[in-house]
Image (cartoon, rainbow, N blue to C red):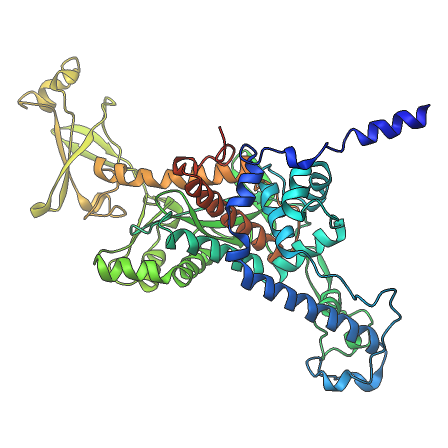
Length: 501
């Protein structure tokens, strides 16, 4: 009796006919049917299968020559030298090893991101629990094992294929007019919490045997432990988010366009500066990957490129670097980094005024001035208090501004604020209005962490960490593509409900 109830309970999980699923209302189905995976990524599939073949071939060769002293310096790329060295094991079937269903696996990993699922163990569980994924990705047939999912995720990252997927997804949106380059790039850095140990070393032979044997190391060729260690995770370190939040994480440099679509993501070590080497590296990568649209802007519209970034990026080295990367006229637009500059005290008519390093101007009674204009012929700024009546109650009103027809006017030389751009001061209203575009990348980061599983990194190693960022970039561009394809372009930024509702 109990056994029958268990069988009924198990059978109740199986849906009665997958054909009854309403694909037009299920966002996973809409996404998987609308985005042309087979059309866009055929070249990636061929590369993946070739990489898998080479890995299995090398693994077979290494297994046969371990401990063989004569083959110590063997050339692993020479097929002729191994024909008589390999033996064929008895197979149960003449059909050989079944190939991975590349498109099914690719669809599965991206569809799971729509449900905030990125960890391989959770992807495997979701596949077995969700009949929609079983039908849309694998036609309702045999499902891949966990080992197959883990190997697919590992190999896509190890061989840089997820990066190729990202490039194709971004380029497709430019070609379709979904994304556009308007001369503005937004750069910011974020972090993804990690699991690895900081500074942990492992023996190098672990990777030598798995990937390519080190022919210069006799111990590696003989299959014995090698004493040459290396870091297990080069990108994880302590990240100081603010004074009260310190965590173990990886850092990512991100670049987007003005319409809030990611162009690229670069992983780097958590202790490195946001505006350091990774800043130049990501800009050069963006220029290389999106050269046609950037060159078109420069040659056709004859306008410079403006790069919007946080204040930490505002250094003399970075201002020179962006010009080297994108050409003359390129401007790094960011809030000045005041550093350790001191506050200035100036006196006018016996009254003391304060000019701090952030261009805040106040009188000794605390009244706040605001920028009015530049007096170019005299190299000075003009700050004012607009309302005359706001100073009437001040005991210093008569000596300070009693004869002024309007509010108090204070002129200060530009040498007091040398870290601000004289041609386009960063404390003006016009600059503040332009600079608000930088907040767009903050929303991108928020969507990635809250909706697409980017808050935490579950794997170690630079290739895996970088592949995680490439997958996020590709996913956001895929969502935008599908939103336009279904006739609702306004939903391209609504990761949760872009397909229905």
